[in-house]
Amino acid sequence: MSATEHPYPTHELSQEDQRVVGWRFDQFRQLGFGEEDSWLLVDSGADLQLTRSLVGAGCPLHLALRIVL
Image (tube, rainbow, N blue to C red; front, side, top):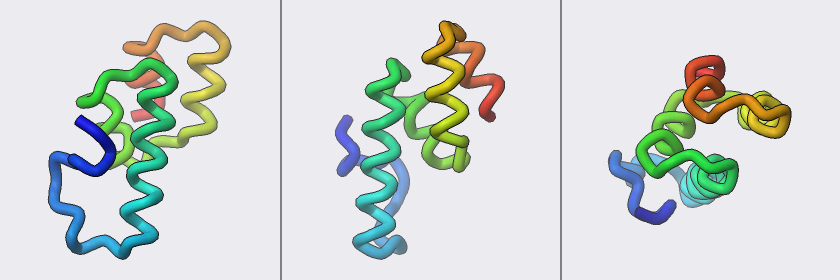
């Protein structure tokens, strides 16, 4: 699933907001999260920088997910 295949309707978002959603999805995927968790993080408004810091410090993905959610 790509960023353009968001599992929830995005037609209510502006084009710019859709790009931001796609970018955030890609960022979480690059950190190693699966598609479902990445969408969960995007939709929750999770702090991307905190997530990066946790993962970069060696925090396991499942624990980082619990912390930022």
